[in-house]
Image 1: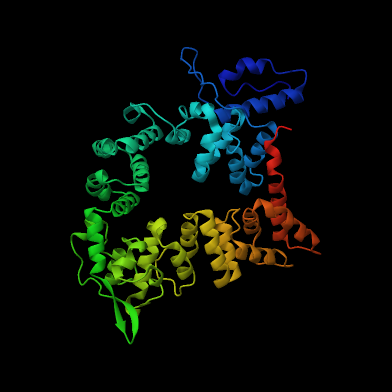
Image 2: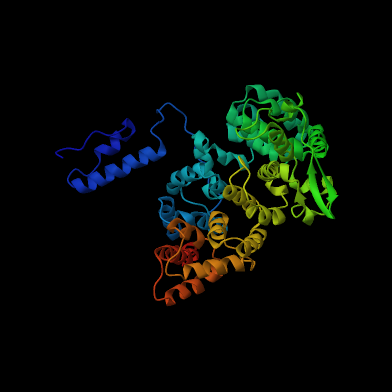
Amino acid sequence: MSAMPPAPDPCLEETWKKLDAENPAAAILSALALTRTLHIAGVETLTASEETVVCSPENSAYLPAVGVDLAMRLLSGEFPEILPEWMRLATATDLILPPRVLPELLSMAAKNQSLRAAASRLAGERGLWIARRHPDFSWLHEGSEVGEDAWETGQPAERIAWLRQTRADHSSAAADAIASHWAGEDAAMREGIMRLVSEDPQPCDEEWLQTLALADRRQDIRELAAVSLMKISASAFRARAIARLRGCVKTERRLLKRIITVTPPSAFDPAWPADGIKEKPLQGIGEKAWWLRQIAAQVPLEDWPDLLGVARDELFSISREKDWEEALLAGWIESARRFPNRAVSELFIPFIAKSEPWPQGAHLRPQLLQGLLESLAADRRHDILDQLAKILEPPFALDLLARCGSPDSGGKGKAILSLLDREMSEKSTYLTRPQARALAICIPPAQIKPCLERLAKLPSISPPAEEFATVLEFRRTLPNHFTTT
């Protein structure tokens, strides 16, 4: 080029003029860096007359430069599987990331909600300062303290933060605020309110949940409302749901064997739609079977033993009436999806993992099992994965571990990890490279070095095993990036 192109934005014109015209290579690199920074920061610029709000001083020191550089590598797409582990290690230091990393970090967490809690702790005051100016990052405010006027004047995340802190001390005031504003909220805010409330619904929420949320035009909001009402032990909704189910199922003895018998509804009750039960069935499913599975799905599995008068560990071993077994299983599956924390997972997961045939129209099995496993604490999750390693085909068991596994330091998961160890020692494997990379995250830190040593002694390993070893080696070096010496 005979001359530099014009500045991409007026705010850069003065800086643009100072680029080193006598060193074209340096000028071009500087221009590229300035342009990239402009696009990361956002192309809207303040005019000189606008007041600028200075970021509050940070209360924490920055992470060591070596750890920051690694963060940039992970955020740029190198070993993305390791990013959650890096963030766990980083948050344990009580240090924060410098501003130059925050655009990439916040953009990544905006797409992946599982990273947001750690990102909030690493973003510091600068992150909150950015979030006030960029709605995409407003979720940073959800865990922070906000002012009393946040409900009326704040961004959506600040309003959710206000609800969270108000519900902790004055749940009735929060319920009144929701009810009075519900009609004017957009769909995203209504869903945000419902996700917060569904975590721990209170008796004072019952009226607006029943009259407003359960009648909402969006299906996902209506479903969250039904789940919330079912969690309120004395709610009229819960009483109706259990009464409906009690009228459909019971246990009997037939030929010295106990069986769950079914009496499906004979007709559709016009009052049911108000409780979220639909009349028209999915294609290929009979009307009565459709009504039965919806009635069954509204009651958490942990309530079924008392309802049927059986022991908790007997529920899934009792025979079911064959004519209605598929509808009943589909209802159980949907109930477990809705209430994963009340699904008697230690019994239901092994039962449903090997149930055949899979009911028509039911939630997909891998996704269901993944959701149930992820709802458990790590030690319980690995206990159940150990059970599955003994009853499922290895490809299925290891796929579940790859989907939802995490390193466990409590000595659990020995059976499933032994299965993984054997598979990685084979010359060929059914595992894909992405699966191998995900499985490398499941190895506890103390076992990384022995695992690498075993692989190194093999005469040859498969390409997925090579991926597995590469991720393990990278994980082995992680702790070194959080020290200053």
